[in-house]
Image (tube, rainbow, N blue to C red):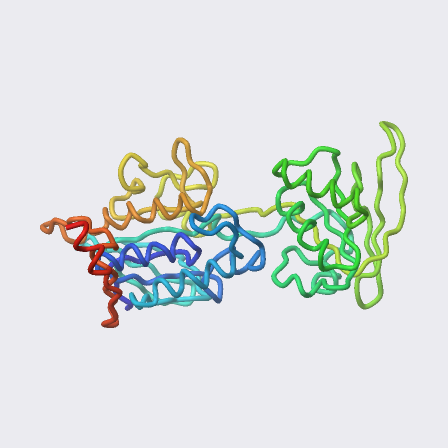
Length: 355
């Protein structure tokens, strides 16, 4: 049995930052994640994709953000159960919770924080007869290492932010980049749409709309795709596009998985929480933070998850230590006291000025 103060389910940015905030309160954390490494979607889906809305970083790669968070929580020595999925939850007579994974690993804590992002997810795949046969042979549903496409002919399909962002990014790496979308209008950010249009005008990318991929083929590796373009309302034309990689980016189908059976209040595949105070679920002692939760005005942003994690940790402290009163101290005054004996003290001049 692994025992801890706060058991966090989900090792994405929100779950990792919760470790830091809990550590400032001298609370120990352990994290469960079904992926084999920390970072959640940032590590698994788009580690080389730039993120622009992290305070203090005009631009930071998703993988780099995860590396920084791991460095930030190092003094607090969190435990990890990786490559295992949290499956069952039971509450003991003393009020603590026991969470067991699909491998039988048991964890016990007075507080559980669900930070599972979108939950378990699968890519939405286009309906092509021989698609599965070319998976990992030229067909990929996510981009982990853009260098894989250097000097290659790449076909992307989709109309959202991911399709637009990767078209822009790969335009500087790949030999040829083609973006196909079934409509003339895109769902992504206007700035990204304008950048793709500018790249098209410069001849750096090929933009085909409205159109769709109707067939793919090749021998041992993907070699071509048939693109069907709508010429007008009543006529279409097909043509063959020679390529090395096909990346359909039609989004993900999120699923809560076993967590959906824990007796929590679920709405639109998300966990309803009380956002007036601490993001607690309908079960006292169980919180949901980050993209996995739902409340009025919810924004699915990493920085919002950081805020939710902070309030959750302060509420958890009061639950774990009901007879103690915690007085908030700014890190500029108190510094960071790690569990490993390390200490990052605030500069004395700053302390003197504030005191």
